[in-house]
Amino acid sequence: MSMPARIAAALALAAVPVIVLTGCSSDSTTTVTDTATTTVTTPAADTTTAAVTTTTASTVTEASAPTRCANGDLDVSLGQGQAGAGSAEVVVVLTNNGMGPPCTLGGYPGMAFYAANGTELAGTVKRGGTTLFTDPGPSTLTLAPNGSVSYSLGFTNAQNDGCENTGYVTVTPPGATQSIKVTTTGQNTITVCEGQPITVSALVQGSGGAPQ
Image (cartoon, rainbow, N blue to C red; front, side, top):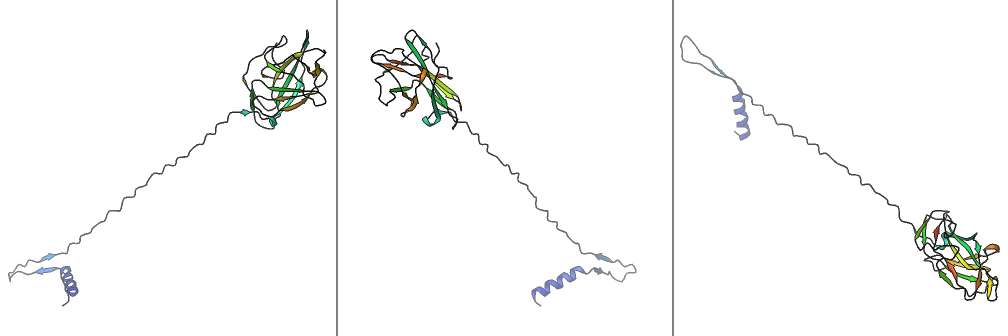
């Protein structure tokens, strides 16, 4: 008999109740043996839930500081000045034309002076104040769109030999290398006299020029 057949027969015999009879006594005893069944329970696998944490990075954008005004950001004009005892003042106004963001200017501008025919006049420029205005000294100023800064220009108010009126001037903003041309007419005409320097104040906030 093959091994599998033997195993099957053994299992069949194990499943049959066994009856044991004792002697020929008037009393008989019957013993019944049942097959025990064993049930094996396999515990269910534990289920573990992993917590997932999501971190969102926040980006903070800082506003950049204003940069120096370029010539293309500026309109330059001449404002009303004043005159007294042989001296005169003209106010030069630099305005942020609003084509860009706020920008900064500070310090003293450069200037050159020209006759109406384009001849450059021999005017020299010095920094400071006169009897008509006080030089505030250099500081960095911010021009919001359409905001202005200005400075005062003082000169000798005379029509002597060696003096000539301007037809236009050029203004070089502080820190710039190129100039902006401004026409001078009427009360804003500047008189340039040989040997008489023209005084220029530092820039101040607003369009009123340097304080008295």
